[in-house]
Image (cartoon, rainbow, N blue to C red; front, side, top):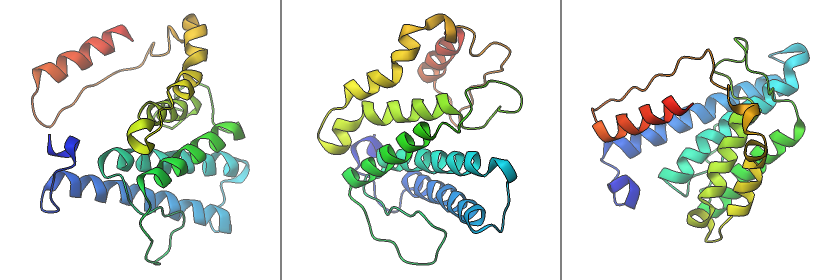
Length: 193
């Protein structure tokens, strides 16, 4: 409840661990992104795809911080410079910009196969953007439900196209602490997939 209401202190494990984990992921994305951009890491004809995936993963980490912490520094390069803290609204704008640009670039795959398993693809990136839009009113004071709906229109208009999206995949629900209500709600959702 303290995480939800933002009444935690710096001495509590969960907010500290979330912050550290997210920024570790952000720094790794920035490090690999900088290596690709400098040419020290060559992904061949996959450079554009890799850069877009890294931007999307970095935006995912920032979207988590947008929920849990609100105002954090926006770091876009692997550097030792001390970053300045951004407002929650600035962070929201950054995440939306990154995700919409990555989606518009058209490099992310829409394929579902063993080669794309566990990778951030077009659909998962759109889902992240949809979730950010759903919470826009909390982040910025202005609702963006229409934008969230626009992200979902293809799924709404073509449900059969997505009916077998999880066919052949294994789903797992792992929890650090037991919670019957959470476990049952997750299991019910997985059965629907």
